[in-house]
Length: 401
Image: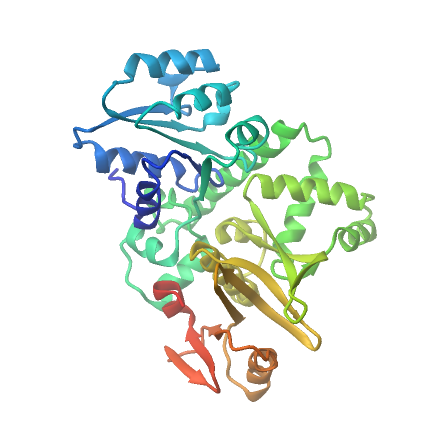
């Protein structure tokens, strides 16, 4: 099957070439990291000045590369002096002590190293210490809505958006197709089970697997709601499951380490500080979230839209927090260097009560940073309401802010 270019990641990776940094592509399993590498190969294969050395630890042909010494031997045989060598290693954490090899090769003149890994601590510990900031992480997200349309050759329509909100943005669905609902959910289940088994249960030697599953289902049901480890532990005890808040925190950390969930902390808009207690949980891929819940799309449309808006804001490069005011809450405070925006998310704003609920908190913020309400209100594209931009969900997902 043809490898489609995800232009955002292609441009990002290429922009770091030749700058003396290891390029680490991080993200959940099956989110498309390997295809970013394959696309790199496809885009640069005819460049006579680039020598590409590719190692894919998910392929049988590379089973013999188990240690740093195996890796060094493989690269040495294919390294071309006086050429621009690009060393690409897919699922590098499968190679024992890969850090030693990587640290040696990336310092070679005119050499770039691009790595992928499924765990957020792939570049922690020794490698991070030895490199002292000489690497950059590129987070690979599931498909955006625009990429979803491209991958599935769909028009921008309400029907396509509904499919995206239901099935999510894992690139592998392109091969499965969206026509057979059972096959789509079977594929999503296989991805979810692999993440839970390989990246959590086996990696951390989990004993209490029933609670591991119950907790992830709890996070699916409470997507976008404020939670705390203590409140979850109390709820679980009410369900005859006696667990500590420390165990909740431990397992939650495993979910985020595997890029299954994101933790979003609260931000005091007036005091300009982060609150340490209580946070919201959002899913990396909304399809995996929907897999773990029962009920129709309509029954949880608000939280699905909020999760999708959160993910797109992260894709656009914002650091995102939940905004806290003395008299209310703003869904998202989004920051980049030199830039702040405030975002409220709603399904449909069809009454004055709903308008006051969504616009009211933004109207109480006294600074002059841009403020947005994003909703799926019919016939809406973009309009200004008393200095607050009301933006349609589809327009936001296609064009950004």
